[in-house]
Image 1 (cartoon, rainbow, N blue to C red):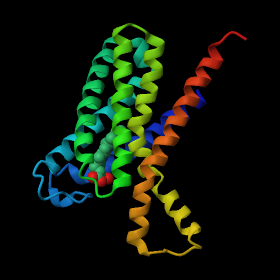
Image 2 (cartoon, protein in one colour):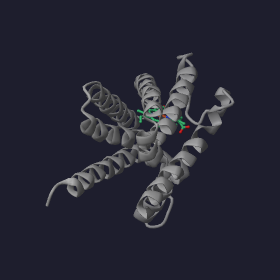
Image 3 (spheres, rainbow, N blue to C red):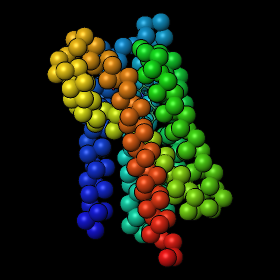
Image 4 (cartoon, helix red, strand yellow):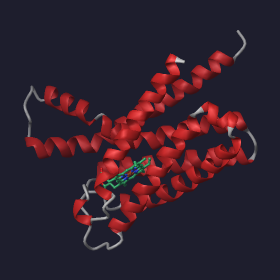
Length: 215
Ligand code: HEM
């Protein structure tokens, strides 16, 4: 019970971060965008906002899907939310691949490309497996898929830790200035977030398998 509570607490923090990061986009005002918009691509902002809102729907519905009680007591709700989750992930993921082209650095673009492809791939696996009624494998791939969804959040959550690491690494100075520090961190945080979440997901999967195998 205690373990379950701390798991939910962790996810609640992620949802809080999710609400915080989408907040500049709810006004639909391009001047509030945190990323540099490409003036030669008029769809940049509409696509970015669509990506963000669909990703947020995936974040919320995915969280509800994790709750065992909902899965057992309300299977219809689990199925409906599952459909909404899949559609959100696929549309948001496809859009993410397009806006990745306009990212302001190659390292960042490669991180988003990897994230996007993993999001689509793990979602596709989970979807195919549930159609074949292979429930256990479906569960495993959906854990991986939600870990990728949450990687976008973990990446933002670890920024303060990265700042600390950056400053210590440079002998407690802001080497190259504040701008340089932020842009360097924004090039690596997605990779770190993705790696941490995937490791955590594999640990959860293995733990469940070890606990349920006869000794
Ligand atoms: C997991 C797969 C995801 C991929 C591949 C992805 C990809 C991207 C890309 C390529 C950008 C543009 C970045 C740039 O040009 O610098 C972006 C921006 C953004 N994404 Fe995602 N994203 C994902 C998930 C999410 C999730 C789950 C959320 C949470 C709601 C989210 C929220 C945002 C926000 C708020 C921005 C605007 C940048 C900012 O203000 O920090 N994304 N995403």
